[in-house]
Image 1 (spheres, rainbow, N blue to C red):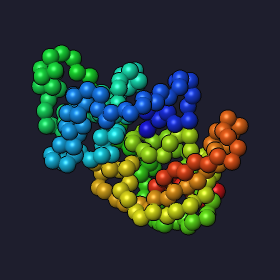
Image 2: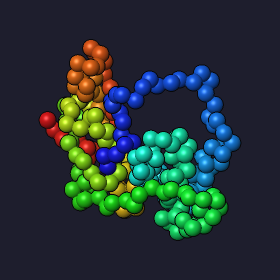
Image 3: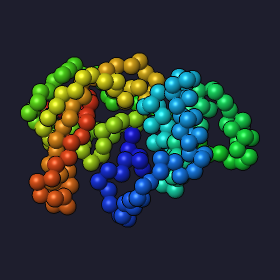
Length: 209
């Protein structure tokens, strides 16, 4: 889906602040949230990693931008635990002692968003173009790469296609590719000369030029 989470290549948000010797967790509650997500995926098997990512993408944009990394994790985990029936929103707010906002409901992907392709269609050295697509559901193809031309530099083994896994549809695997783009193909003269970017892309995201 096209959402506020897909910020790759966008400017105007200020400098990236690098924290020297940054700890994994800044607060004790963040460690607990990290553990809760592991419980949801590994122990309860209530949801998968792609459903978790999509739950975060469905956050209200204003909430998403104001939240820290682990606040987003907490919202995604809580949303899925409510949607999967592990607990109710009322129970969650009773334990939280007040309002606990969840992500918005998921929209079902269109059939054209998840149409399966037979692969591997492309080989190392072949030119490809990223499909110009705007799926209503989850996707791992970044907006900045859509419609851009690149070259396959590695064909990876088939891997679970996130656009269906994120919606609880029957799992399917597709070939994945490492595709190299000239930075100027992605961002024209705003990019450095001779700089390149490598993006991991599933076969359904690619076409021949």
